[in-house]
Picture 1 (cartoon, rainbow, N blue to C red):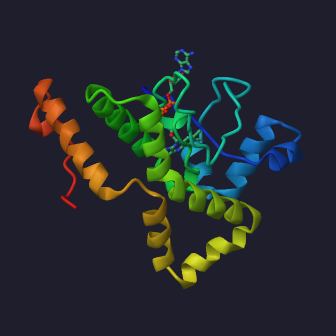
Picture 2: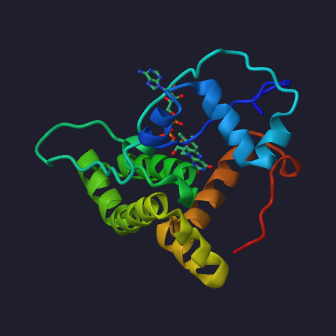
Picture 3: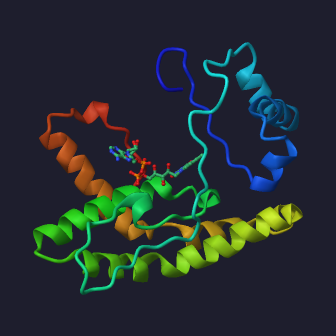
Length: 195
Ligand SMILES: Cc1cc2nc3c(=O)[nH]c(=O)nc-3n(C[C@H](O)[C@H](O)[C@H](O)COP(=O)(O)OP(=O)(O)OC[C@H]3O[C@@H](n4cnc5c(N)ncnc54)[C@H](O)[C@@H]3O)c2cc1C
């Protein structure tokens, strides 16, 4: 939900599948609701505000910025730094982490090139395996069934594709501190169990 009674619906789809619907958004929406009873239930009674999606874009899974060190460069954060496949659910965490880390390095007098190299080292392996798995799951959807037989593989995959928890703990501690300094009361913060 965005605000009031409005909701923002985003979807990931392959080009091939979209073409199979003749590029028709209404056909895709019908298909998604037939495929997912849960979505149909959530959308029941909803009225589209627009006839077409506001934006359609390809997502460069596996992208990782790495600039030549002798070229001036902006500090690339979030999706501009690295794009992890969606199934890992880690895009937001990477956006927060890279923002925090870039600020830290900037204040210490470091350079964008150093930062991008660090991002590359930090996320390169996760991006690689995340992208391989994502492609495999799209090509052979029945692979997802393997999780039923071998549930522990799911946590192994998530661990391999996520921002390391130590980095997140440090980051969330600092965000909480900054929010408190800005006058946000303890009761307004969502507390998470300590890791
Ligand atoms: C369909 C979909 C589902 C996703 N689901 C999840 C999920 O469940 N969990 C998760 O962690 N991540 C998810 N992600 C990924 C996550 O949304 C991104 O990784 C994250 O938002 C990246 O943050 P960002 O700040 O880099 O970019 P963004 O959040 O995209 O922010 C960039 C902002 O810059 C603005 N902008 C662009 N160009 C200009 C310009 N020239 N001038 C001014 N403003 C400009 C844009 O309008 C936008 O508001 C999903 C992504 C998609 C597309």
